[in-house]
Amino acid sequence: MIAATGGGRVFRPGSAIAFLMIALWLAALSWACHGGPRGEHASVLSIAREGGEPGASGGASSTPLLGTAAVVEAHAAPGTPPFGVLARTPRLTKAPCANCHTVPLERMRWDGSDGRATAHWPVRLAHASDQVMTCTTCHAASNLDRLRTLTGTEVTFDHAYDVCAQCHSTQKADWEGGAHGKRAGGWAPPRVIYSCTECHNPHQPAFETRWPARAGRVAR
Image 1 (cartoon, one colour):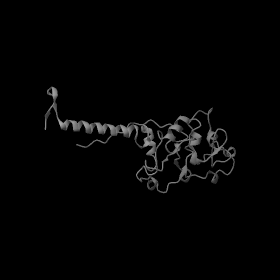
Image 2 (cartoon, one colour):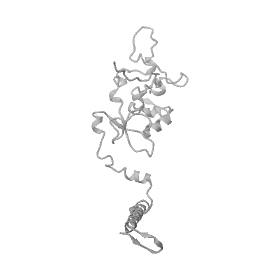
Image 3 (cartoon, rainbow, N blue to C red):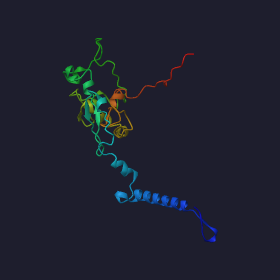
Image 4 (cartoon, helix red, strand yellow):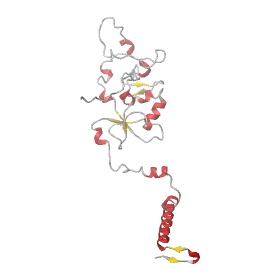
């Protein structure tokens, strides 16, 4: 239906209805963004925080994927959401150290003159120079079942990252935030990650140079 108006203009009722619907849609969108139940503009960050309530993962969990692995609570910086670390002690094949180290470390030094093999013969400290660190920089000489910090505080092998963090604070911060290291089980909660010594040999932490991986070639 087309009706003539003054001045030769043409009025189309259908166009007016479409214009009205668009205006109502824009008004509703503006109300949702700037008004709505919150009463003010909701930022993306605030919406993300509200979405972090329990159950936001849809019920998914990494717990079944962890199996029987022992997990300890991480010593994280204040304000960091709690997370777990795979325990190291249950998987140490030569622990507890006190089973063999029955006398102080100073009395167990050996120069290799009689040809006997030692339990730790492949260990070579290539972490820092001899002027910077020795075995007892990280190992507590009076209690070989523990590590130690530079101030002499004893640390269990499950929390070896506390020792590493003394020099590698940047990597520790990235590790806590999830930008360094690997996740155990999966990405659904609970968050459990690998400790530093799962990937790095503490005596030789640098990764050796390797050739890039190559895809297999199809025989023709």
